[in-house]
View (cartoon, rainbow, N blue to C red):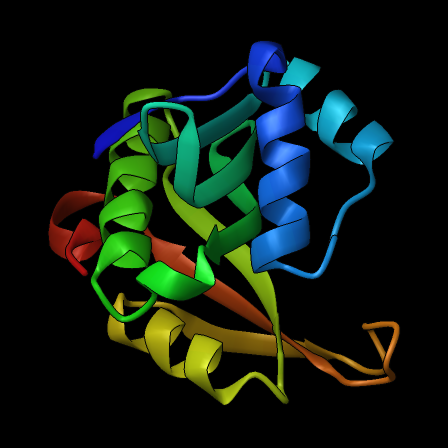
Length: 150
């Protein structure tokens, strides 16, 4: 399995993966827009043409806004998400990012625990943020110095 950057040429793979791993979180049009943005870092763990894990983040001045993270259901709990996130942090930092941020549902205890383990801290809450009415925790992580460890 290899980690590599994903671009517009992987649109169909990303859409299919999203349907399998994230219950079609984004539409085809959203994926197309994301993969074409110059400010987006999108990387995946792939073997041949099969995606096993995928993360996307948007660089905004000196911040990385993480917008998508998913792992294939058959490959969860194998460290792939952590491996991808650490690679994303390295790439973002080399592009000038000093901090990373994301939102996570208060109902997603596994994701909350994972983000805590890799150094994210809660700095706020967005009420009724998700379609199902759940709140989002606003998470931040410093990418400078030794804080990039997960």
